[in-house]
Image (cartoon, rainbow, N blue to C red):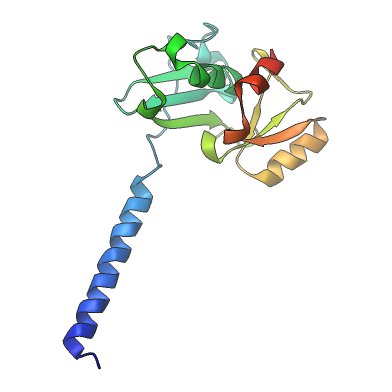
Length: 166
């Protein structure tokens, strides 16, 4: 039979572990908050001035505080899949966060949590585009309303998917 002291120690230990897990949950994967592009920020893939297309802005933030802006998800993925070409001093492990502008709300969404519609009748600044959504429901609604072909998650977007958009 447990003594009161043992029971208290057990409860305190459980509470401490719970608090630690909650703190880790808020810090892991949250990544850096998105910034707004300035008039000087250009997409490193196509060279377009990103601020002109606020409804399409994407951003990759690196752990050292540096970042790159994009004029759409398609160019962001091109960069992501070929860091060696666009930013040779970086590797994927250097990435802290990836943000895209959600189509309906025009608010940042974390790319790994987004739902992407491809093959729709909506075009971005660089033509055919991956259209990001915060929820599956919104993606399905858009797919139906805009003749989309498919919904993908972040890990389903591949270099061949991006190539077919060009």
